[in-house]
Length: 265
Image 1 (tube, rainbow, N blue to C red):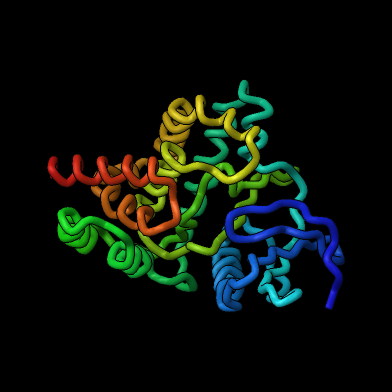
Image 2 (cartoon, rainbow, N blue to C red):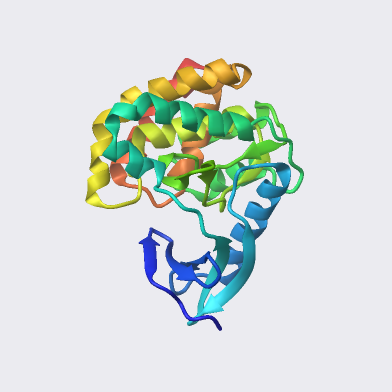
């Protein structure tokens, strides 16, 4: 077994350590199942094979009883940290994120699991109130089904700004599906999610609304079609998000939005 190098980062589900040969290992926290690492490795490989800008996957390992994935080491800051360090470049970063997502949404992929099944599972398993669940399920069943690369967790905290361009990490929830759904997910994360990281990243909060507007304007210029039907996708995407371990504040905001949009439908 290769010895771990210095710890490089830590998040809600895993830690990142240096590894031999210009590589890194993402180690899930103790208690995680081996299939979590296998799932992330498989989905990253499938996305990369479809043409997505991802790090290369080298191996799935177990270190000190913890499952992990060995990745190519990417040089550069997270986009979220870069935004906080240089807020004057906000529009540039928003355009870069839009370009990245539009690139994914042009890539057909059969190697990732179906998006609708993934979302439906979360809608049914999550703590969604009975008063809104039937409407959400009916809406989700009637929305279009496609097979394009969808990251499922695209936001500036999952983008590394490398000298060769931005690269996406954390493909654990990637699916093949409708770009509009993936775009809706990104919008909700940008507006409401408590993005992982140190206290310094609180500098992003005052910039959220402006960043979302810039991001959507740039995406619309690149790929206008997925913008149609964005409001329709918001309730099921928000409902699937509620099944995750999020803050009460975010959960309440998403539930209010679901109720408002279902009432207007």
